[in-house]
Structures are given as C-alpha cells and as structure tokens.
Image (cartoon, rainbow, N blue to C red; front, side, top):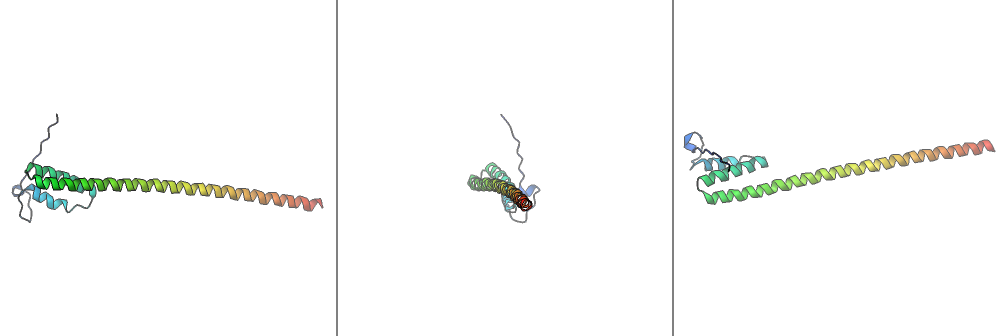
Length: 128
C-alpha cells in the first residue's frame, strides 16, 4: 500500500490572490485557466480535482474531472493525428524517392539507347 502526503494551504495562509477566495481550490481554478499548454493544463485539472475532493467540493471535483477527461481525449486525438501525419510524410517521401529512382533508371536506359543507336549509325555509315 502506498501512502501519499498532501498538504493544502488556504489562500489566507500565504497565497495572495486579488480575488476573494474560499480556499486553495478557488485559487487553483483561476490558475488553470491561464495555461495554454494542454499537458500542463491537464495536470493542473487533475491537481485541482484532488484539491476539490479534499475540500469536500464533490460537485466541482466531478465537473473538473470531466474537463480533465475531455482534455485527455483531445491530447490523445492530437497525438494520433501527429503520428498519422508523420507516417504519411514518411510514406510520401519514400514514394518520391521511388519515383526519382525510376526516373534515374529510365534516364540511364535512354542514354544507353542513344549510345547504341549512335554506334549502329556509325557502323552503318562506315560500312557503306
């Protein structure tokens, strides 16, 4: 069994906030709205949920748990889109490399054909 120690401080005990607060949960709610990075915001929402549970504010804890789940789903969807984009990019690069190789081969064959026709033309010219 793992034990975790969690310490909570009320806004009046050192965290200064311009707005009237009922506790750390209210302070943390305002701070989570300022984050623009999804992973950071998700972590903050999880922490906020734990704070709200500790304050017995289960209604808001449930609300922020749902926000956290939706954000987690969005993060996963974005990650999958990025993975798909990388796979498509690799596929397109490989396809272009294959096209280039075929064009180079075709160019070499054309050069050999031109050389062969030129040699045949020279032999015919010399032979007559």
